[in-house]
Image (cartoon, rainbow, N blue to C red; front, side, top):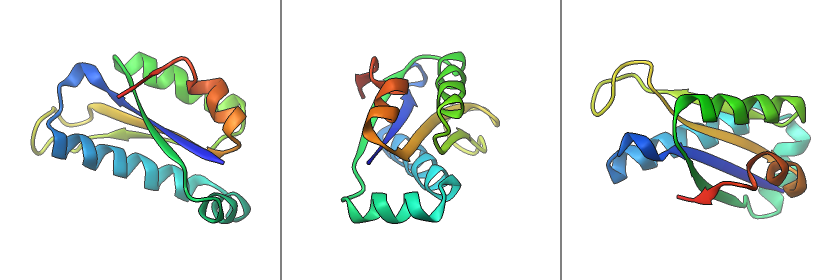
Length: 112
């Protein structure tokens, strides 16, 4: 079991802002998962990886791939109070889900 969080590298977010966006994505996708998936992921150590992509379109394309595989996912749009404009897409979480399924969606991306 695994979760991949994809953050937008092209926004140049500060470290704290990036961490908050990754956390929002992770928790939101976890909440999207069914109870069996949540239990299995928690019981297996909650494996996470943070990856990078550039642009909103890239994140929506990945979210579409996650949906087609039936994976929990969550796109984060920022409130715009600090570093970016309101509604800016900052991150996407894919999973938790089987590692092979998550990798099929995000496996071509680089680590953040």
